[in-house]
Amino acid sequence: MRPLPLSRLCACGACDLLLPRPEPAVGEIATCPRCGHRLYKPKPDSPNRVLALVLTGLMLYPMAIFLPLMTLDNLGMSESASVFDSCLALWRNHYPDVAVVVLATAVVFPLVKLLLLAAIVLPLGLDAPRPSTARLLRLHLHLEEWGMDEIYFLGILVTVVKITSMAHIEYDIGFWAFLGLTLLSIASIQALDREWCWQQLRSHHLLPPPAGETLAVPGRGALVSGVLRCLDCGLLAACTEDDADRHAPRRCRRCGAALHPRKPASLERTWALLVTAVILALPANLLPIMRVDRLGSSERSTIMDGIVYFFKAGDYTVGIVIFVASMLVPLFKIFGMVIVLLTIGARQAASQRQKTIMFHFIEFIGRWSLLDIFVIALLQALVHFGSLTSIQADTASRYFAGVVVTTMLAAKTLDVRLLWDRPRLRRGRPRDVCAPVGT
Ligand SMILES: [Zn+2]
Ligand SMILES: [Zn+2]
Image (cartoon, rainbow, N blue to C red):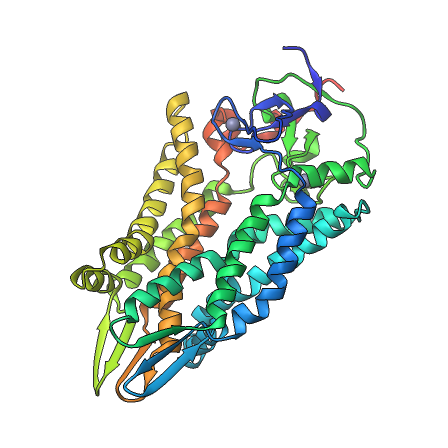
């Protein structure tokens, strides 16, 4: 293949393959021919659709978070709770660390995501983008997976199944508002066309021009071709000798992210986080995660006890959902990432492709493990009928939240492109390849 200027090339974010920039039509998806990773899918009328969805979501937000989700009636007593109440209940029950995790993922980040989207697409929709839009896009990319309103909503449904036999349930306005907020939040992310946003910034000359046009040959790894790919926005830059210095990295001229040949100390950090997750997983599974006080007697249950409860009660669907989210997903995440880390030297293309797909699956499912924590938070806020029945979080909840957070961080820390690198690159000698190419 003949060399092309970097402005007409892109690099796969998963395997680092350098490719001619794809231009799929609406309805088509451009994927990497080597690893199958999605490169680009155009979204028609993105800014207007995102703006409409986000503004509606922002109107629903106060009702969804602060109004009661449902009211329970039990022997003449009634209790109701909102999403915010579930955070307060954890805080008051001396689990401030778990309360902060629930507050951040179910209350704060969903709002921040909506506000960021509004701040990104409003000026773009008005054809008047601002220089700050690049940094907002980058911030949104990093916060996206930490806003978990859809997982919290699944937690509400599991909670409903769990307390159906305990009390009469009436859905309140907060439930419907939260359902609307969740659907709007998912739809707004689906409608966002990041690549279009970046192109708008370029077309309005808000990006500094490159120092000079660089040529590279597609079909090889970007780094071995002397090209760096920004992990946040995908912009390509020619390598320089200075890029080997991980303490003072260059900044991406489009989004301001640090440009590293590979994520610094990726393997060491990922191993450290995985070992931490394994250590936390022991008390998370062995200690009780929930306590039910009923008529003066106290019953404490582990994660497995909760799963067995649903199967014994005949609620197989919910039992399977909790089993998958609380047991299978954390185990699969830890073992899957250990397999990826241990076999990072293998060079069979088929296994590299399978491991890349497995890694992205681990990245996708990792956050769903927080489901059990959301269920306990809501149960604790809803079920406190005096001395008759009350439910409280127990010790394992903070360890389990720790497992979810550390495995999510481990997936973010691992640079999956290492799977595709030659041994020379993996040994951490980027200086060998960080030399300018045919400028
Ligand atoms: Zn690829
Ligand atoms: Zn960038």
